[in-house]
Image (cartoon, rainbow, N blue to C red; front, side, top):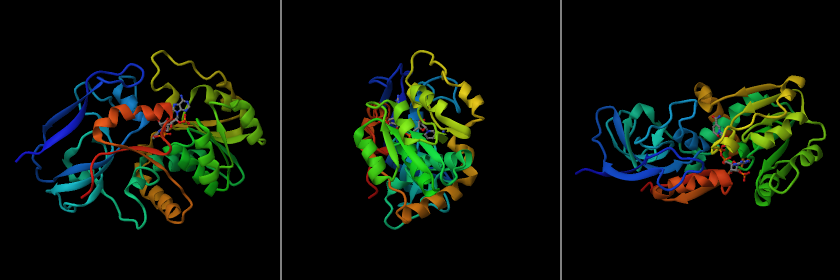
Length: 339
Ligand SMILES: NC(=O)c1ccc[n+]([C@@H]2O[C@H](COP(=O)([O-])OP(=O)(O)OC[C@H]3O[C@@H](n4cnc5c(N)ncnc54)[C@H](OP(=O)(O)O)[C@@H]3O)[C@@H](O)[C@H]2O)c1
């Protein structure tokens, strides 16, 4: 008896925000499981800013999703059928690079069984213990190289990556200032996540607020946003500052060429090290990142939020939450129940 899959496929390349009709929600039979493969059912789908990049044909770090192809995405799933030694029905796995689909049939070697950590919810494996946690950990530790007493500024601070960056920087003994888009987010950053200060870029003068909260200048700018916010940070960088370039979300929906940073020269004047990176650059070191993040999580040193949207059918419309800033913490879609 064949099982019916539900898959989002890219119908056309979005212009600006993703809109209705850019993707098709189709039903098709799930292929039979061959030797070495598993059939997994998605429990949670991760929605990420990079989904928008993959939908476009701009020059990017991996091939774009082609028209008519299933939308690419990661998530957490349960094994339903296994012809792969080492995985059995009921195992919970990270899908690796998967699809916006209810079911996936793929080589068992390409999915990773998740460890069971008492008291840690599954969604942590998409946040602190997932790709966004690893992005924060390696970007800050390897490129930012934080030292006790230094000042760290992070943009999109209440999001999945930013909220981890600030808390890791606090653990390293830094002074941490977050930039976010609402008073509620700023309150969460200072009162729950332990940031020293937070700036609401929608209501405050970011330059004035940075001068107030970073009286000794900025040693690390963890860049998630680009555009005007980044431009305001650049002249406030200290000599030999570091700048992990993680993301430029302010430009992902742009329909016109984006102006370069007006204060680019400050990178020269202040001897700044800027490095763009993609989290998978660190794939061989993920066990180190998982170990550190897992330890801090169990010790209660890291707080995290998950913004859960119900239903695979709502995936494309929910991506917008990342661009309007509706999400606090990691945005995920709950697709099905484990049982
Ligand atoms: N290099 C890598 O390997 C890697 C991996 C993962 C993520 N990233 C990047 O990291 C950044 C954060 O990703 P995430 O997954 O953690 O998403 P996220 O921060 O959870 O969500 C995106 C946040 O960006 C903020 N934002 C959106 N448009 C903005 C704008 N025009 N100006 C200022 N802020 C804006 C919104 O918060 P506000 O309410 O504060 O506006 C929103 O909540 C993105 O740039 C993403 O591409 C890079």
